[in-house]
Picture 1 (cartoon, rainbow, N blue to C red):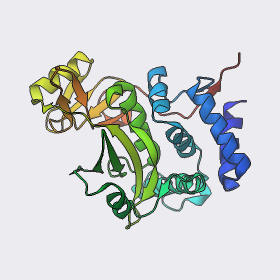
Picture 2: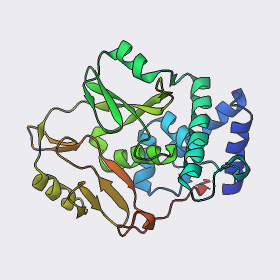
Picture 3: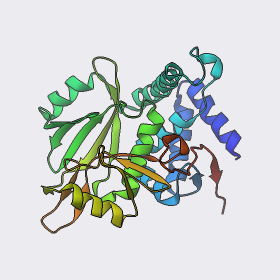
Length: 272
């Protein structure tokens, strides 16, 4: 199957409303992705492993978000923020329709999760956090990313570079105000906060360069890493460092921080 054939098939599955045959095909594509018989060239091998580590829900949603959008369905001017928002809603609606069909969708996340898990224990710029035994459940919005495909990339990258605090995608939902959410589960790590200097040393050992201390931004030519402050990075009693949360992206030239990567949705099938 060629790259063009693959994406046409994904678009057909979407157009046909995720019937039983389409759902089976998506599951098969996820299996091919996880077993490395479908290579997603958007990612490095490590990053594809990180995407797979998010679970089949994450893989399928990433593929649905990556499918093309008919330009005639968009009304805002090309290149405008309004057009980006239209694309975001198209991607979110696809994932919503699929998630409702397979049963991994939650309505009114801001009310449903507290009723299931109790009151939230923390809140960040984009996430609400709930305690569940030895794990945390997070409801993550699109505030930092706008496009669901970029929010899903963030999970893939986090899992690739910080596997000790892997994000497993449980499902998706919307708040009572209609804001799209990704619902993830993550290990609950006990530890102490680190200083900015300690965090900088940790990031530099990983090959990152400090670019903006005001928002804790580090980069390599491949990866943009931000929001790496003392509430998002902890050190265990054994001295191990755990990144709990961060803003991590593929570093493209558009971010203006020396990035060399290009966002692509090219796929390649590996035949034995």
